[in-house]
Amino acid sequence: MSKTYFLVTSLLLLGDFSFLHASFSPSLIEDMAKIVMDNYCSPEKLVGMKEDIASATSNTEVLNIPEGELLANVLSDGIQTTVSDPRLKVSYEPNYVPVVHPELPPLPAEQLVAVLQSSIKLDILEGNIGYLRIDHILGEEVADKVGPLLIELVWNKILPTSALIFDLRYTSSGDISGIPYIVSYFTEAEPVIHIDSIYNRPSNTTTKLLSMSTLLGERYSVTKPLIILTSKNTKDIAEDVAYCLQSLKRATIVGEKTAGGSVKVDKVKVGNTDFYITLPTAKSINPITGSTWEITGVTPDVEVSAEDALATSIKIINLRVQVPAIIEESASLIANNYASESVGMDVAEKLRELLANEEFSTVVCKEDLETKLSADLKMISGDKSLKTTTNTPALPPMEYSPEMYIELIKISFHTDVFENNIGYLRFDMFGDFEEVKPIAQIIVEHVWNKVVNTNAMIIDLRNNLGGPTTAIAGFCSYFFDGDKQILLDKLYDRTSGTTTELLTLPELTGIRYGSKKSLIILTSKATAGAAEEFVYIMKKLGRAMIIGETTAGASHPPKVFPVGKSNIFLSIPTVHSDTSAGPAWEGVGVQPHIPAAADAALEVAKGIFNKHLGGQQ
Image 1 (tube, helix red, strand yellow):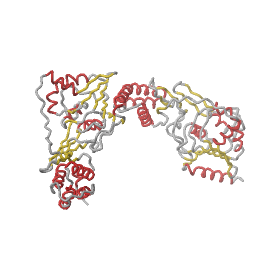
Image 2 (cartoon, one colour):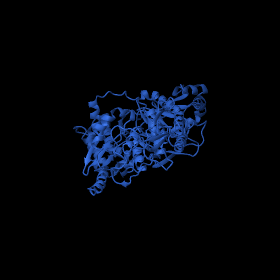
Image 3 (cartoon, helix red, strand yellow):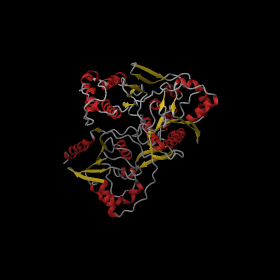
Image 4 (cartoon, one colour):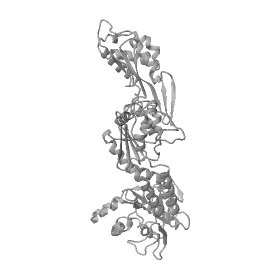
């Protein structure tokens, strides 16, 4: 069923009216429908309207409503519901006089100055932030007349500012021809940009709005922050200006969602009646988004109440002023401290390139900057550990009773002994040596002693996410004999410029597993950090067979560096393993001897041991 028939039928059901005689002309609805069909800006919403006008208008009960104003309200509700557009409105105005906007009179210079100063508010805020409020968007004709004065009284005072807050919270009127003027002052002269398309329904024409290559006065530098303030009262042409600059990524919108008006609304008399229909006769179609702000409004980048918009925008600008120094300091920290010098230098250079390309010009808060910086560092380096972080102070050590330690160890370690006396040991995090040392005897008694006398062992690190590397040497030592000290790895610390040798320990708590019994380590793509260092050492020295997936390719535990006085902190890996014999595991992971899906690795390991050990019995 068509929209027109539904419109008329729904109007009849809006009230229980019973009148003997019609009060208004039967052609009223037909005339109104024709006006909508010929002038409404979105004809695609009116498909099927023409075919049903004749049948729909034969039902005229609604016209029995005796009061014109009441009928107008009923008709408005019906047409707004049918077309799904609150901008269409029917009114009954017997005394309506069309508004004719007078031309700007030839005022003396001093009076013209007074008029402009009363309609435009200008201020220079702390930090050399410009503030400009305009409550009406001037059209081309008026702008040509008052342009020189506007440049002298307003624009030349704005140009030297470091950033601009453009206040459109109170702007509800304007002229379409003013859109290119305003947008062009915030874009480059070349190339000319297609900023908007205006479709005019009565003429069935589309006009492209282009940026202007020639302007009166200078342009506002595209490198300077531009914030536009909006409110629910920001309407029509002001919405288009805000949406164009937002779509061009030239401005950040702060405030409330705008009214969702139209670039052009006309009021048309319905036949020879005193009824009028107000409807949008043109619409904006943005060439960048392919969409429009009409009806829905412009959604701000930072949504706050209109009252808070100015204070919020000042905070945003003050942050953006600090951004270059923050990025430069971050680049220097990475260049001077990242574990691999060549990688650190490359990351720093690319980070500076992002800054030069205005990649950080749209951040709106500290958290936004931290998120973007982390994402960019990961993209550039491929290192998940190189990121922004918090500088949370370490919690004070907790006092545990021996019973609590035992329960904690039971949760942290899982042991088993499979067929053919195959030991199984799983733990999902490496501990700090200084923290583990006092409870080493408890770990030996409740964990190690359950698997140390097995014929072979499976160490399951598939869910081990790393942790400190300080206990690596001690753990490795259990799988080597104690008669000689073995060099496990060399760790180079970029920050201090020192190299530390990881050596097996001559003395251990508990007995060693030794170097003779077979050992398999299970890995997955989640195996990371300290766990990878252990796997790398055991594989490099030929002490264990690795089964599973290539490990995460993370890094040694990173250090935290403050970025100047910004209260932003960087997590930077500063240590890498000895690479004299080729690439280690950082960034690339450790490849297994026998690749297998993580969930199948244990059965593969058990199968290998059962075949080997079973045949010996």
